[in-house]
Picture: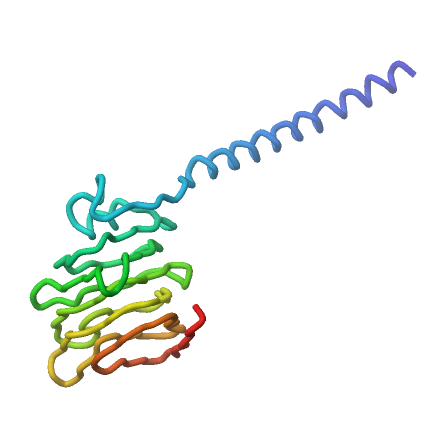
Length: 196
């Protein structure tokens, strides 16, 4: 009988050791994942670093999931949004993004879905060759555009495009959006949603 207990105890010891090793590995991965995913932040532009110089610097210093609240004012700069960071202006009548000479105001690219919101802004002064004088949204980006004014943007003369969505996917426009010029949807679709 005593021999049977020892034999059973020896068999349990390797299983218990393997079980403890599996739990330790799982906890290590869970802890690494928790540490790697920093919490999202709400930033103000202009504000504290990295949002104290340009909107692009503010975007570059942000991580996916952050929100940048843009204070009222006229900001002359051209920016690229290449991560899931929402841009929320104080209102399209008071928060104006004006393009630098011979550029568009905003280029959106990368894995951005409709949880990324661009709202409460005016886009003006874009002047480019090609499409998207104000905003160019490249595949696979699909941000939600809400309560925007897009006005006074020009392209190379063959098109007067203020807003372009290129490639597959759905462009969602919600709230009160005002556009002057032509809006082009190429290989995708558009959803107009006044209840957004």
